[in-house]
Amino acid sequence: AKSGPLKPTMKLVRVTFLLSLAASQVSAFTIPSSPHTTPSAHKTCHRVRSSSLQSTVVDNVSSTTTSSSNNSIPQMPSHSPATKLPNQIYKWRNHNIRYQVSGPENADHTLLLVHGLFVNSDHWRRMLTGLNNNNGGDEEKTYRVYALDLLGSGWSDKPNRNEMRAKLADGENGRFLDCDSVCYREQQQQSAARPKKIRSSSTLNNVALGTASGGNRIASVLQLRHPLKSPYNFYTWAEQLTDFCHDVIHADANGTSKPKVTLVANSIGTMSSLQSVLDEPNLFNGVFVINPNFRELHMAEVPLSPLTMPLVRQIQSLLRSNGHGLFKSLATPSTVTAILKEPYKVTEAIDEELVSVLLDPLLTKGADDVVFDTLSYSAGPLPEQQLSSPIFPKESCPVWVAYGKDDPWTPEQRVEKLKTIGRPQDKFGESTVERIIGLEGVGHCPHDESPDVVNALLLEFLDRL
Image 1 (cartoon, rainbow, N blue to C red):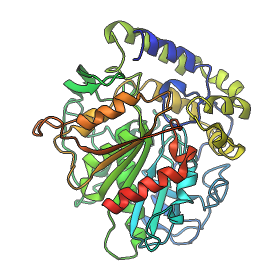
Image 2 (tube, rainbow, N blue to C red):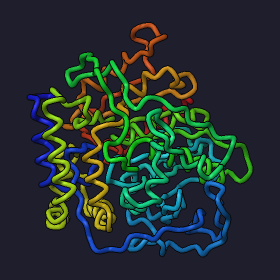
Image 3 (cartoon, rainbow, N blue to C red):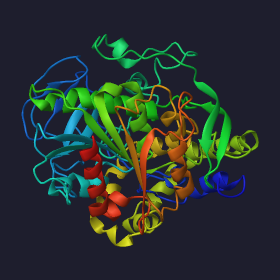
Image 4 (cartoon, helix red, strand yellow):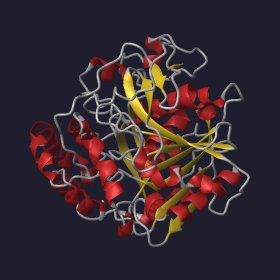
């Protein structure tokens, strides 16, 4: 924390009075509940494309042909108001997942955009529609750009953590030594060609992390498992990303060679993206991070954790039990606009379209429970720990980081310190992160605040791959 030891606790109290639709500072998220109906569970797993009547097998469970309809997600429009692209549905582990795609099939580069928590794929509106405008890049190159709503976010399903389909989809299953759970793919006896999970400890010791002032510190304990056993964790989202690459992106290649995918992540989407690279490195050729988040309410981030975490846990429990009503009263465009002005330095980017596309799906049933689960997620991987992993494929999957220097949520010095995140076998100073670029005059969401600058940097990164 940047100030006293109670700062994260006070920010958690403050979160009950905020409705956050920007990217990823957990302490700024509150979401309203509503009477909308949750999409029902499906017994078959398939993908529905708005532009086609053909449905594709997902997870090798079953194949079916279905209408090109998105009626299985109540209230979702047929096209995104922000991008004008069709809202398409990917059936993943018995859940509806909304995604969008732009650019030609079999393009020179294939990208997957990963949003922060409780925003959605529309937050990438200026990249989804702007990247093929080239922004100073090679006009002859083409880009296939995908963006999806992670489970629990946007128009994707938001099952309660106690639902059986949510428990089965949990990416923590089969991952830790002190748990006898079985991962989804093994339960379904799917795809022997996919890498098998290697169980590891759910607790890491003596992990090197950074500080807000750019220093070094050692976290004596790093807990990886969600304390509520909720599926809303970085391992679930990482598996969603890798499955999406196999089931959607590779299927769209029309029988040509399977393209390597470049991940583009904002904020907390960073951890899901880095974990997907650690899980299946052969799928990816690079990660472009925009304003990483260091999770101020993580147990390893809270100062004097043995003293402060019991109070944090009490507040988290109160939120889960009694926080729903307040969210309803805060679910207004004016409140959302006011909150977005905190992370956005370029407030002119906060228009009615942005407020609408972020607010509307957050009014669906289950969104409040998802945010309470996330506010209770004081565990999981952290960027320095993932980047310093000895199995991170830094030669085949380079990492660039761009960040807004006026971001109130991501400490500039800690981002710059990523330059010296070395792995045990590396000499000091040799980092998994190849380049870090600070951007003047923008905040936590440069891809929406200054899209021309960010898109140009991304094209430069793609040319390097």
